[in-house]
Length: 344
Ligand code: UDP
Ligand code: MG
Image (cartoon, rainbow, N blue to C red; front, side):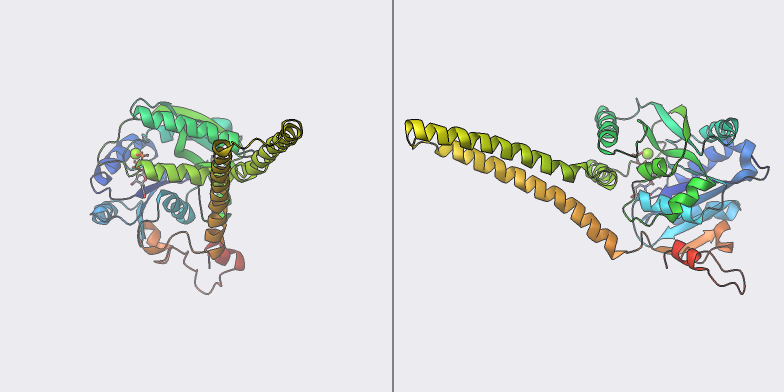
């Protein structure tokens, strides 16, 4: 590893005024050995409390810190994407501000990366102990990882691994080149990574404040993940349709034979109702699933930006405009590739 490497810690924050100061204190304590190798990028995801003021206090006292301010709440995945886009580091580490991703693990990430000697481009954090999460969350998360990996034929995500990981510049650049708007970062990290290894850690309870993900948000997040990485949900209906048609065909032959031998049997209203209602339900579900994909295609083709940046302050303001794009060195025209990387 080169001597003057830089690690960009990317911290999305949404209504986290109580967490900023404890986070910085713990980060400074735990990452003292690499103090000068850090830049810390807070991405304010449309907080409505005093988060921005708290981050600005930190910026005034610490040259390594920057703030990327979103115009409103866009979500954690866009916030991580924005952080990766502006990061200057040779490495990036996405980290929650609630100290559920213990900062000292970053030292282990770096050690593992160095031991790999170029073999790994990602060192991810494996949640060895999730006892702090509720039963319901652990159970649903466990299921999600398995369903995702079953559905997604090419990209597999390791079980019990969150966004907390170290990725090197190659992976950062690959992710920055992606143009897709619906981003399931765990999947994209796995997709962009060539080879990876794990460091396990115990995930502590949230240090301050409360979780920003309710059941509905997590459900939609899970659907986004599966629909962005798998076409099985939409393809499976051909097979279900084939299966039901085959059964119906067999039933038809039986009916014809029965009618020829025994004549017409008048009763049959309940069975017809059952079949009609069952098939109606199946058709609605399948149309709904097709709709999920069509909706996502619609969203993608509109090509709206993933987020709108409303100001960059701190360290990054020297190199970035207030809309988050990189400043032009005097007289140098933006090349086409730079322009498209910045989404213009
Ligand atoms: N977060 C965000 N935008 C959102 C929701 C969450 O930037 O819309 C941030 C939040 O401030 C925190 C991180 O994402 O730093 C993880 O959120 P949280 O701890 O609430 O998630 P949990 O650990 O409960 O899954
Ligand atoms: Mg948390």
